[in-house]
Image 1 (cartoon, rainbow, N blue to C red):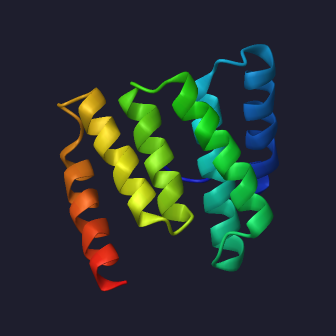
Image 2: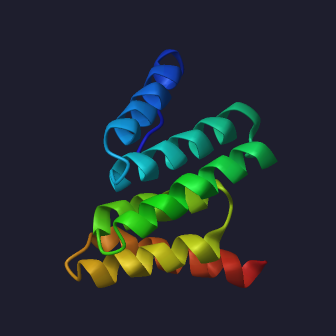
Length: 122
């Protein structure tokens, strides 16, 4: 997953907002919205601000509530938690994605191992 190009960032956020206004149960939009906010903030300053973290967590929670068994959404939520420098939460959602789809991308297993090693170093 990649953040929208800088010139398109605000358009992307507006599109996510419009999508959930039309369909408040559009979990994918909430997941992408949260991940996009976290990644963009991190790219701009190297660390996600407290205000952005609050907004991101709100979007991610909503996505996981709406689509708790959708592997793609759960993977996106995990990626967003990586952007927030929260490896334990990222691992949790990667594991949930694998449970939701046992044929999930092998990269998720590698991500879990990588993040587990990071946690071990903390």
